[in-house]
Length: 320
Image 1 (spheres, rainbow, N blue to C red):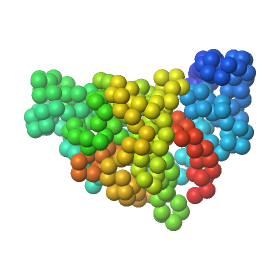
Image 2: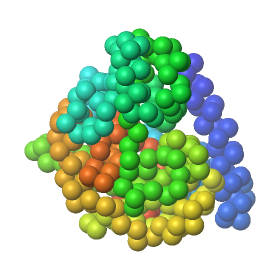
Image 3: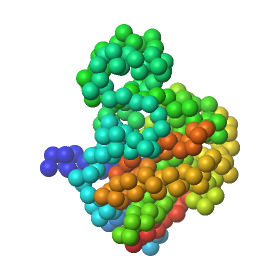
Image 4: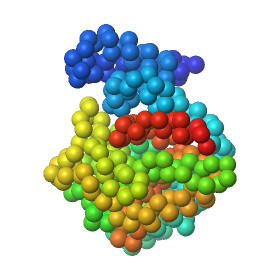
């Protein structure tokens, strides 16, 4: 109950913040947007962040009826996912074990590894990532180098994993430190056929190790047929539409994703591996050899629906 009240209070304060930002963009009164954002929160389950960043304030009522929101994505998840199996997506150790056929990089479970095994891993790789097994939104991810070998005993027996650094395809590099991934949203119908709903290219910025939206990354919409960026990106830097990747001056519109058709089939095969969880947002990296599975999200963010303003996704989701 206390957590629920905290979230309600947090959303109320955020609605004031985003109403002010929206008013600056539209020229309308702050009170108009605050009342509208609260109405959208109560009527459609739209978060204040989605109201502003996702352009919900622009939509007419029939578009709002068909756009998936924070509350509606919970309904989709309840309809399609068996909660007993979602732990396979929420824990990186269990995920890498279960989807071993699709994880094409070396990794080690620190919780069940000795110090010498961890030292051997970093000696082989020279440079790796350490991730909390149950971390989300890229939090807690760090780089480890060979020079850190003396501190590795701190991680032995702890709930972390070490992963080999992915060497991504040159067309996926944007002069930033993160591996830039595809967020690929799939849903499985009752016959077992997997449908690809939406895809976004997530690009990190600067020295960030992660490409997450909440860490300042940019998400660009991808055309499902041709595998090309077909619209401006969105970022959490307050409403900007991004055509040029920040800090690199690379014009993104029309940029092609390598191994596109192979990656689509790849992610459909991944989704079939876990038919008990039929609605997932998969994160996939592209290497010189093709796709490499990073993780699966049973609760992909609602900002994803603002890409290319393709509203009506909620109706499609519920139709399966």
